[in-house]
Image (cartoon, rainbow over all chains, first blue to last red; front, side, top):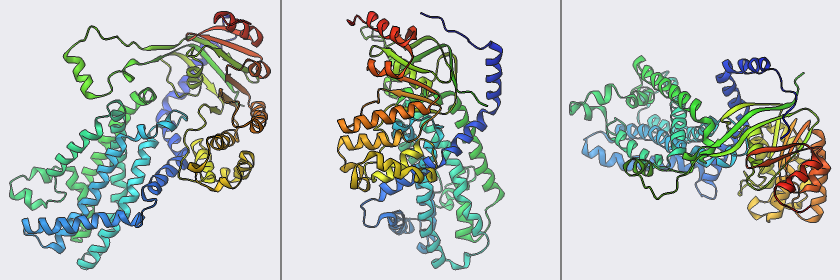
Length: 284
Length: 251
């Protein structure tokens, strides 16, 4: 074997590496930004393929939660003796946000597996594949929210006012929570393909102990205040519910819980990602 | 000015065995419970062993080696797809790699749409893709089918389109894995010319191929891989004869 000629002196190499290291996070984010055309395209093409050849197409994301809400509010309204016109938008608001979280988490846990053809060919930051799932579902969430807004405008027009601007924040907030969460799940999911099944169970359990379809008064009546007061899901939903259903601004506590969730999941995603990102290709 | 170059120093690459062993939680838990002595033990695959290589601007390097010698792994490692387990890897310049052309088509979208999508995958902007779209359409030369969904294409047409898109944009560092030759005889000649143009525009070329005449006509430098190690690095003619000697192929 011919030993290789002219290597650079070691000092040059260390300089090269030292220049790289501190800006790792910045480089990563820049990579996500540079690939924006690609992941936006992926998200839009997911939507196109979801509605291709269906008669109602994009309308399904509005029809489906509406139909489900009608059904549920009829049943639950009787059980919990709630006023249907006011209970229905409560369920609807819980449903559209919860569906988003569920779809993004389950879809996100398979994001790397789904994008394996791309991952094996091109070196983009892996977080763009969970961003794709998040973006797709954010668009569905926005559409589904239209039905909620319309419903509330008809049934409770007195709630309309400035606080509604705050409700718009749900989109960036829930996106910032779901993206890192989906990213963490994607890393676990690529290693253990059981994750989507396990998530089904976990989310059902979470749904059961959270004021998503059930009203807080049900939990409080059972002396389960903690399930409302310390539940990030409750606070997240309040971002929409306070303005739309009560005509009030969300409280600082609501925002604090959301911010906390964002920070926790982001830190977790960075920790997992920095260790596992390079090895993902071996698991595909 | 930035200099394009490749510098590898004591590069090792392992395929970690966990990736193809326990794939589910069940088997992971199961493996704690009992140890089956009869089962074959799967080790990490040591795919690249102490690879040292420096490629300077203007060099055309041909990779030779038996199947599984590490040529493709080496190229994917250069492209940054595979992480290295040890050593130093410096690749400077825009890397353009052509590995598996047929990946990433959307069957329900038209040929034209797929041109855009593939470009976006390569990190190009929509504006730039619109600019070079006509040129790609002309090269692929599949007539009116360009406005039909990809799923209506024959295999050959897909290859032509994929080739036309992938070779439309060059890079400073070009990595090729057995892609010369696509489509029918008519297209083959065209494809080869285009490939050579692309090669000429690039500063550095690393090409893996079993087609010795092509390698010898394009490359001056040959690198022979044998079971993950570089066993020869030098003139391409000597490289070919070394390869033949090692693998017992009659010259």
